[in-house]
Image 1 (tube, rainbow, N blue to C red):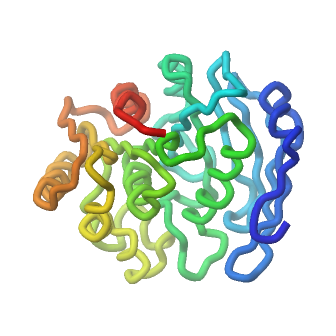
Image 2 (tube, one colour):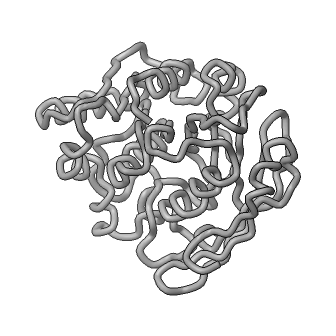
Length: 293
């Protein structure tokens, strides 16, 4: 099916109780060329449903990992929190986001679906200007999110979709919401380098490719041009320091100056890691605010 994703509706319904079924083999159209994406049947690994993905937007095989509440209601639309990785592939130097969600029992507490995609290259949630296998933003928007929308009982309005990250994935969470505010309701970042102004640090150069491309994603610039269109709700959340307290303080001051509503917490200093205690507060701020889905 050109220009979209083809699903069998009966497979979508049965997938929740039979995650071993083939959920998706699709043909995507991008910039006039046919792009192949295949998502394999789910395999349960320690309570997490793991789909292997082959997409021309990424190099090799990636994954979509899904953590469901134990009593997931197939007839109800659940909130979805996208747990954005800070490392490529399945590397875990800084811990594992979905494991932290599971250990804190947050999927049960909030009856929400938590989804962790993986990426073939260091994730900065952008599209490389020339390398078609580093199209991270497009992969997330055209493969990961539509797959979850179609295959699980996920709410599909923006107020059901949340973004959670730290460090470069905190940057990514804010970038994705600011660039696509119609798709996502809230984005929570913890200990993120929000004031990064140019290529060179934190592995940015191979992923963004050029200074011109980086400028399209630079957080302070996107905030200045698009932040005022987010409305009166606090859709951006910034919590706690680890390595980047001064950058948090600077971006918070800019947002105050530009009258952009946001939730700001300057809590205790924590280790730069998924498991240092910041996740429960960030998830609570994402999922307990006022919404009109």
